[in-house]
Length: 500
Image 1 (cartoon, rainbow, N blue to C red):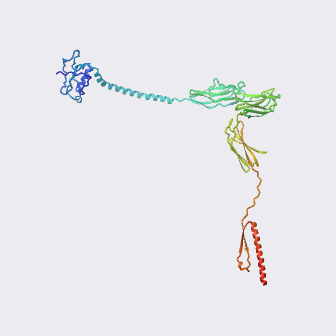
Image 2: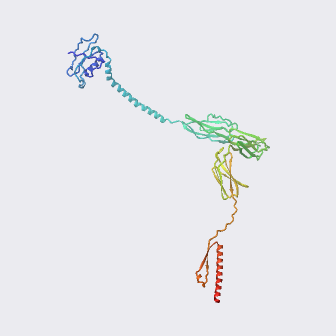
Image 3: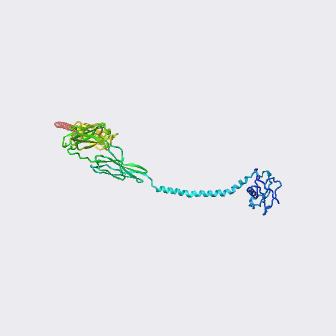
């Protein structure tokens, strides 16, 4: 029996009911790029052997012949809902939708290929990435962090005699361990120069000589994180012995600031002029970096220098004769402003004692306040007391009567600052006139004696008087007088009665 021709796929919408056999035939037809005939998968027409198919007389010329194909395996029962054969659409639309079968077959082979490799690729990076991060973390934890050098031991100033060496020591911490390079600087220069070969924590200087007086030394520590230099440590030489026959050192050398920016130096002649008379004096002031001075006549014992900047200096004085310069005397001196006035100065009196109170000055000037001077003056009387920096009060006792001027002055390394003055009056101690005692109340009872001859006056009467002691005595005297008069009158009456 001849099977009806398989309807070619068309672009027009076809009925949704299709058998599983026809779908399989479409797949086979797409693979052969031709038209494959297959019978409907029905329960009645499912032969197990292939049947020959003759070309249809209605096939147009040029159309490939239909190849006999065996029936496909039976599809599941649920895939064959009907055994009816649908009529074939017109043949002229056979070759138009040739590209449609690949769209049907593409999803069949794609899912298993696309999903499995994707899962495999996503798992492999997840297993190796944590391992690389863990290795990097482990390497970071083991490597120590770099820290810049920090000086832990500073070199210190060292004094030596002429021809002696000085050893300076410095230490610093840091990661990695810093290297060290010692440097020196001449006292007349500001440039630091590396010392060849001085690369350990300690450095010993060459013997001290007059060719390079008082150089400064420091160490520079360096590592990959930075560099740090220590403070400067100076090499100081003890005073050199003067040449034979030169004068001894000047005596009583005093240096003090006498005005803002002014230094006054005073001294006395040396005890020994040397082998020849003194021809001049040298006096001046200097820092480690520079100095200033002048020559003075042998009869001058005072030097004044002006326009000096604030700072710390050393005043120096020496005598000179024909043999040369004698021993030098150095005195430290500071130039700058003194403290401002002490605040809230007050003086209160209690009897002959005066208590002075004050507050710290608002400006300390050049250097902190190192004490207070409290001075009380009244005529020829003067009382002075020096108190430490933290004091805020002072009490003065047994002061003489009069008006006292109280002066409070703060001082620092430069000297006294601005003074503040208040006054307080201590009255005289003249004894006051004695006061009379207050009158005391006195009560006196004066009996009045009535003669028995006068029965009507038989009751005894009492006279009560109050007042001072003098009044009581007067009242008593009056009572006695009245008693005497009464007695006299009674005696007269008795004599008169007796005569009758």
